Image 1 (tube, rainbow, N blue to C red):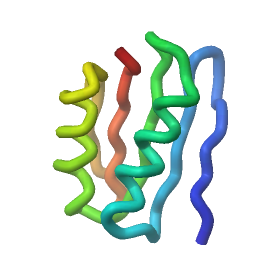
Image 2: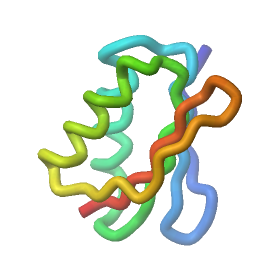
Image 3: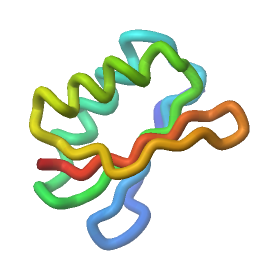
Image 4: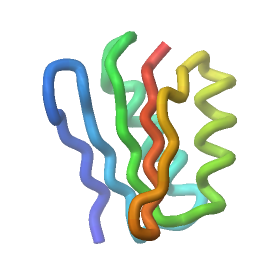
Length: 83
C-alpha cells in the first residue's frame, strides 16, 4: 500500500490514499495541496469515510474550494481547487 500523487494533465493532479486511515489521508491531502499552484485541482481518492469531513474542514479553513464529491465503488472522491 503506497500513497500515489501524480499529475494527470495541465493543472490537474490525483492523490490516491486508499487503504490509509485517519489522520493519513488528511496529512497527504494537505502536503499535496502545498505542492500545487493556486487554481490547480487535486482529486483525492480514499476509502476511509471518517476522513471525508476532516478533509473538507481542512479545505474550508485553508480557503480551498470543493468542486465535486462522489462515491465510486466504495471509494470516495473529492475534487479540490487550491485557493
